[in-house]
Image (tube, rainbow, N blue to C red; front, side):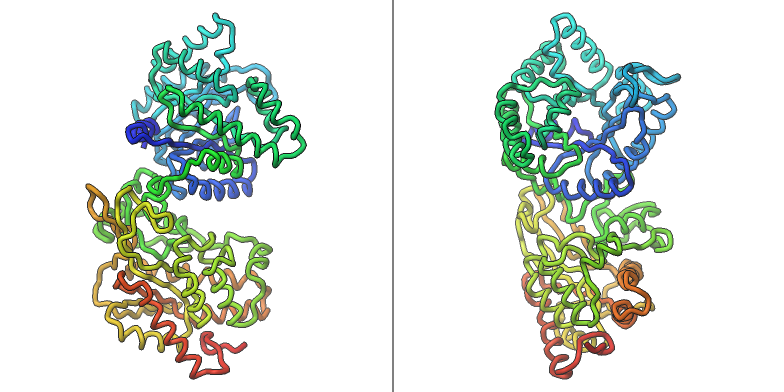
Length: 605
């Protein structure tokens, strides 16, 4: 969606909104760390993000890559900066073409700063001289496809009258060339900002103005940034901050309150501004503290329009159904299905390619380095130690497993104790969801989708289990007509008790004025494709240990002997029913093997 439409929609609903800016880092590890941070910060509820373009275009490829990743796997609307600095027309066209391919609908057009090492700005041969030239070029090539933003400078209000009027004339010319909204440079003098906004409106400029807000992180960083941008600092800011300039924590605490008060004045002023754009500097804490100080709580429909993050690339924007198996590995699912001609919308299986991409093309790896993995999981030498790791993950005591890079989801806490017990009994769970019955869509734990809706889901568990314990479990499951399962081994032999060839809807939502949405399913073909990935992740875990070591041998034996199973309890009104067969089968196994192990093939301690 275009940012101007988001602003218009929020204005109609009377909602305050916010957005974040990031810049491309210099290293590959820095890039991965930043993408992880962006994913985490989506939980703060930004309506969109923007990605800067380095002066001289040195990080232009990284900007394009970040836009692609944020649109596709992070699933957040992204605005791409684009500058004239060191950018011949051909390079500009490549950037715009790639942005459109990635589903990006928003561009911030800038002249840009002088390249590093130069004091004066100069155009390159075949390039653009002014920001207005870039605005006109984008419109000439793409019509109204992109929302175009330009920069606004509240500090210009402090210029002598003639210069101030000239700068306003230049801004008006850019707007008239076809600009949709304005991002302002950072500022700290709210009175100067309000004066400038009123002057902009008096000049006949009516498009939205988005104030750029820079959290104060440290004294040195604050002074350096304001000096570079020649930003006026109110004396009361300096009086409050300078006595604590050697105490970063205190500076951040006081700075947060000062900037928050500035934001409150902007939102309360009669300016028609109800949005704030935070210059994060790729940092999490300052922005988080500022949102908390302002009591700006994310809306569920913003952070979770579906139970999973929707991809915003052109060919996937309408996708609203996925198999549950990749719930914790969305990037893998996106990669393995990127060649599909169409993506499920409304029903899974009506119009999709029958094939998942091969693992050879995507590759399976652990996100953790060997050192990180050893610190997380240690060197287990018994099945009980492995089961304890799974149990701790479900209880929130372990932040990752190979099948989930992130800690257990908030909804897992509703069944954490049951899952912990299931794992201790020998069922190594890698995915699950609790049953819910008519929970409101704005519920902080389970909510997703538009407001005023109601949500339902069936209880689900997926796990590895040894053959003896599996047979005991299936005997108990067969006594409950509401339970269905799929069982598969590493070789691909599939076994099921379901009589339906179609998918089983696990999650659905009922919303005002909409068809029922069923975004998560269990389906046989997808489970068979997921099987290879699930087993390979276990093998990757084994391979962090030295060849011939007890830990590697143990993990390889577990992966080689275990079955991969998924179980659905179809009575969503009975949330505890799914666990009963597991508890009974576990107790039965223990009574038969009082000194044994629940490991595959009875691997002993």
